[in-house]
Amino acid sequence: MSDIDFLANKLIPHYTHFNVSERLLFTGHSHQAWPDVAREGQTEYFDVCARDVDNKWEAAFEKTEVLRNYLRDFYDDPDGFYCREESTHVLFVSWMSSLDLKNKPKIISTDGEFHSLFRQLHRLEEEGLEFVQVPVQPDETFAERIIGEMDDRTSAVMLSRIYFETSLINTHLTEIAAAARKKGIPVMIDDYHGTNVVPLSIREAGLEDCFILIGGYKYLQWGEANCFLRFPKDCEYRPAITGWFASFSTLDKPRNNDPVEYDHDNQRFASGTYDPSSQFRAAKVVEFFQEHGLSPEILREQYQAQVALLRTLFREKNFEPSLIRLTHEEPLERNGGFLSLTSPKAREIRAQLMENGVFTDARDEILRFGPAPYITTSQIRQAMNELEKVVHEL
Image 1 (cartoon, rainbow, N blue to C red):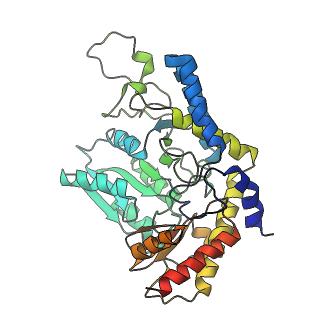
Image 2: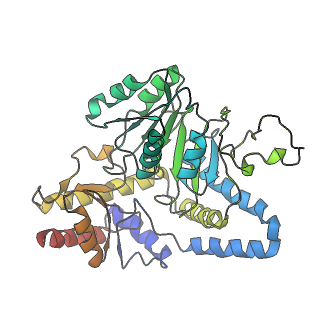
């Protein structure tokens, strides 16, 4: 039995509601199955609400702290603050509203960012923001080109640790963060495709003063509404878009014309009242991962082995490159948790694969196969065989 199957077969019995053993679920980079215990978290929340009514919030905050502690462990970041919100977009907008965009209207980013960041920055560009998109290729000069754009008009640098289209790991964050630090420019890192798939020690990487966006929808198996903004404990940003959850300590103070206050804690960038049921669900998943020894190192080994097999099988099919090809030929160590393929008919292939029972996704000319820890070698072979059938019928 392969190492892939050893872990996958150990996990499969715990994902019966998602029926992972009978389905070819290769959207692990987008939405992973939830273990059965997640359902217990949902019902636990209902029972807590029924019992405690408005006093449920103490239990809800405890669940959120479970998630924060999991992330602090993953990132080797015991001193970081982690603000919870419904989506990374809410956190991103709150953080953006802290910047001095009037006097420093320049934002440096890349041409490899996810749609939410591109859309928001492009819309602000229409209102006068200077939105600089540095090409991620060629990689050899990437850091140099990012650093070269930094000047006294720059409010922030925003970039991914793993690019959502190619699955390539950005290996230049330490160098870029050091250069930005010297110029007093904050760095925002989108790590939606890095958390729980490619280990990162914030301390060893010299990223303690960086801001990191984290989402639970993908590799964490936490589902929707479990997103976090990691920020340094000495952060004193004052977001202009701010909700009452950002300062519980001042709620009983008389209203006056003093400057708006912020609690010096995890909630600095928070909005308002939310549905905590997702935290109860996610806390059960955290407990499950810990019980089954799903450490960052174990998960990284599983993803690398799965992507390696996907890539080997793809190469063995000898596809016509004009129809479909590997998006990149970089070493496996530079790849995240999914296999990226390029095809002018990516969306057509994805639709036909879905008809054949293979869950994948497509973005423009990119087709993505994303395994998950419970995916077996047999399922990987089945998925590649189905791809071969679809491509040959084009």
